[in-house]
Image (tube, rainbow, N blue to C red; front, side, top):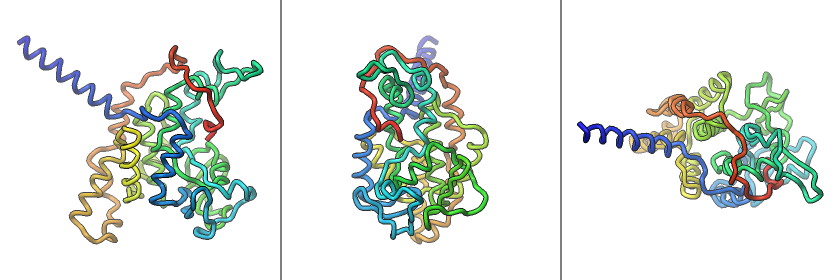
Length: 305
C-alpha cells in the first residue's frame, strides 16, 4: 500500500513537471536587441515584411515588390523594424512598475520615470516576454508606428492608406490581410498559453483568433521559423507544434501542393488551443509586484516597440 501511494505521488509530481515545462516561455534571451539580430538571420531565408508582404534587403524594404506607398513618413517607411505582434504594452501594463514606477527608476539627474523603460529595467520576466522571438516580425517602419498598440479586429470597407498594402487602421483597430490572420491568431494563442499571468483576452478576441486560426492554417515558412526559434530560444511553441506535425503528415499522404494548401480544416488539430489555455489559466497568479532580486539591466529605447 505504501509503495502504491509512493508511486501515485511520484506520478503526480512528474505530471505537474511536464505541465509546467510544456508552457515555458523564453528563458534565454533578455535583450530585445539580441532578439532582432537572431531574427535577422532567420529571416534571411524569407525576407518578406509581415503586414505588407514586401521583399526587403538588409534593413530596407522594396516598396515596388508589393505596391507599397508611404502615407506620410517616407523616412520611417524606408526601414525595417521588428514589430511585437501582440503589443508589448498589452503584457507590460500588468507589471506594477508600468504605472507606479520603482525607486530604482531614476535618470542621471534624479528624475523618476515609469512605463516601459522602468518595467524593462526592473523585471526580468518582462524583458524575456519582450524579447520572445515567437512574438516578433519584420515590418515597414511607418506601418509599425501607425499600427501602434491597437487591437486587431474587422473594419468596414477597404480603405487603403499604404498603396496596395492590405492593412486598415482606423479608430484604434487594425485589420490585417487575410494572408497573415492565422499567423497573428497563433501568436496571440501562444502568448496567452505561455504567459497566462500577464496575457488574457476577452471573449470577442478569443472568438476572432479562433476563427482566424482555422481559416488561415499554418504554412511551411511558419513551421520552419518556429523550428529555428525553438533551437535558439529553447522553448517549444505548443500552439504551432501540433499544427506543423499535422502539416507534415499531410505532405506524406498527398504530394500535390495545391491540394495541401486547400486542406484548411485539418489544422483544427488533435490539440485544441482553448483546452491548452484553459488548463494553463487554472494555475494563473494575480500578483505583479516587483520582486527583490529581479532588478537587472538598465532599460532602453528598444523596449518601446
